[in-house]
Amino acid sequence: MNEGAEREMLILLANLTSLVDSHVGEAAADLRQTGLILDDAILKLNTSFHGIHEGLEYCLDTEMGGQMEVLMRHLQQAIIGLQFHDITTQLLQRATARLDGVCHILLTIEALKSIPNADPKPDEIFLHLQEVDQTLAQLNENLQSRFVQSLPQQHLESGDVQLF
Amino acid sequence: MKTILAVDDSRSLRQMVSFTLKTAGFNVVEAVDGVEALNLSKTQQFDLVLTDQNMPRMDGLTLIENLRGQLAYRKTPILMLTTEANDDMKAKGRAAGATGWLVKPFDPERLIAVVNKVL
Image (tube, each protein chain N blue to C red):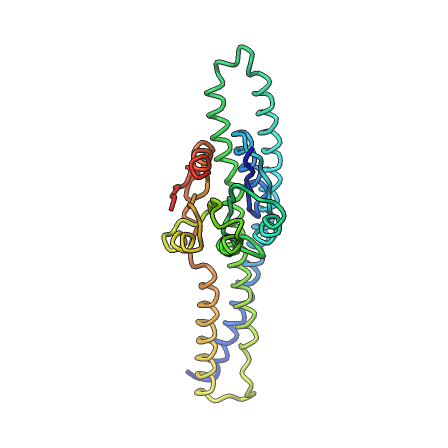
């Protein structure tokens, strides 16, 4: 590869990191906003939930008493449903941590994009790109190791119970 | 009245657990993580501990190991309530001294049944 092409590759790397960093930052901001809205929605749902429960208890001895079994089942399903806050919060935290990790990788690669030698020979450029690639692989492995297990929940049916 | 210590860094989850168990006639004390739970365990005797796994400062497995190290909690039922469902984690929980493993989200009726069974 000639000098011009090699320099162009380095410029491409720099542009790539800048572009990805910009989009990753926007995605992270969207996740944070989703978390805030989620927290607010749960606060409101919790208030409504407790209000409904108090109302049901008050109606226990009235003509609604016959419907209590049906209403209590709905209440139990609401308890299961409201737990989505805990699960989705974990998913948001994982996504945010992954994006932060990608930003860190991009910054590290950005710092490595410059070759110390002002007038490098082709083999120096090649070795430098190799070093960048190896650093990228190690950083990726470090980031991946933080997310060993994925969250299994795909829906909100209640989970398994096992007594030892 | 039996007293249960509910440990989870999620406030909404603690509220759901507390609501469910109080409705069933239990007294419930809440802790935000393993450190708070451990401190509470030294000043108050709980009849059962229900703990999450992934929490700041001290996770569930570490909490269980510390509790089992206390004479007063050698035989106290300790249940894990967590999103973790893989067999490796369950084996670690069992080795640490957990009495049982419940995967979130919990069904209120099943939770009450399990709690009554182990108490």
